[in-house]
Length: 361
Image 1 (cartoon, rainbow, N blue to C red):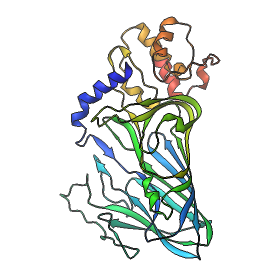
Image 2 (spheres, rainbow, N blue to C red):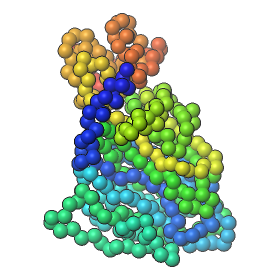
Image 3 (tube, helix red, strand yellow):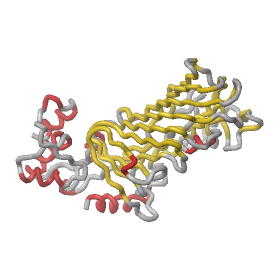
């Protein structure tokens, strides 16, 4: 029933989505060789951590194998420009919504440069063609810019195994439909010599008490994910021609993280993770799991609804309510996971949750 409510609400508002009703800030990407190479990706551990519902912290560990003699290679990182209700102009020469870009090769921090390129055909004989520093006049629209960024550096790969540790942060995107969403371009890894990642691990740390979905673009079903913590999953069939809902797995994560592992990973799709926006529903028929969507919950109309809201922090943790009305209500929530051993304790709630319970007394 809940999913049908969401579907109806999102169809109603879908017509206005494509204007400046959202902000696409950036998406993550793999490191790629700019020139042809025989170097392969033996191992990758990619960790994506959502921080305060504001940005994604990316940490990547690579093991590359060079079968031949020492080789200098130009490596690139393609950062696509922002779009929508955003300022797309560079900030101090860099992507305006990416920060803390670092590359460590075999325990040496590498220097990098940033190029502005107009399309994917920006290399020539292994060299990067930059269109120069973009110029904007006072009347120019900055919601869309006609270039993207390539962060590039020279890497000396010794014969045998080479280890790269790579980090950066990028801001979460969002819109009317999505409380947040983020993308990561996995398919770029196919540009290395082996056209795959021999041993791949993806770790996603989304935070506590979150409901979110991941499109089935590079995997088939929920069983391919290890839920390392407390939570539950459901495979969702997409709505035909829907902008919002695709074939995906929906995760209700109370705490912990997700792990996806694959050997000989031949990548045929990219990561798209999103949390649908909850639109306040009359009579509190549904309450979202996330801290970050509480502001969209409608005001209570009676004492029972006030009790329901007051007890939300305890329901998140799986409290089995003795009050039959509360018990019946929360058992209907798709995210609710009963925990008979949990005893409610106001002292261990977050400060915001303490204020929340006080608000509805």
